[in-house]
Image (cartoon, rainbow, N blue to C red; front, side, top):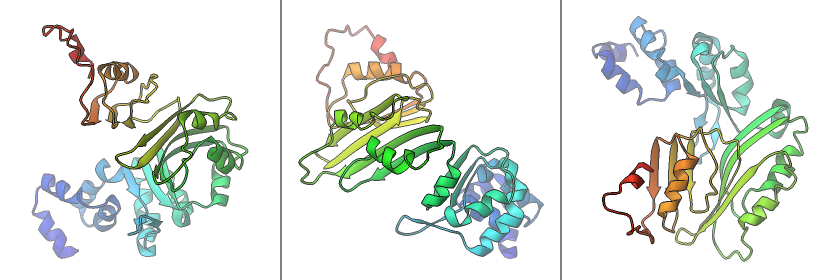
Length: 292
């Protein structure tokens, strides 16, 4: 490390930051904190301290704990030193308790838990749960029945339950496909919340998609909106993406502009021409250009 740091020390800060940003944040912190004053200042930048992924991603997509040597250094030195700068933590169940108890996280606003066991979840989620999931299913979508029997029936002390769940499944030879009406019916026991569902089937991709969420939608991204979008007001959303095998007509964009008044970025994945070309609009009338 000493030889490497000598060579890196010859580079200007701007180049060093570009190089370090190519590495994972935990590797940057583990390798360069306390190497010298210059590196110490650089790696304390919010670029490297805002979000820490304290897990190791395996080749099969699962998550595992970091090496004990790495974890020990974070417990004893690094986390207590940068605790006030950390805004988001990704942790897995076996090291979660040590990470969360080794210091106080004054600026923490998000926590991702991986490989969490049922008993641990029952102990932690006693009042509030905000669930964001993308799930690939084999036989059926996730609906209200799943949330009731697998979550709310077990977390009896839960006072606030927010969710934004997208489930997908391959279209094989299924006979009885879930409709949007069926999905809405599955939430009949959720009396105190307005729940939105959108079920789509894409024949060219041989895939079905089901999106369920509370109308209190606070995410900044809303992805893969189709023509089945029901409208509503989404004041937190800044980025929107559209996808469908059917064309998006002019009226759809008018509706979207009202639903996402603070939208900053729109991505459209669709190669179908519009059926309504609005030939009746004058060539000098450009009012429709302000929609997107």
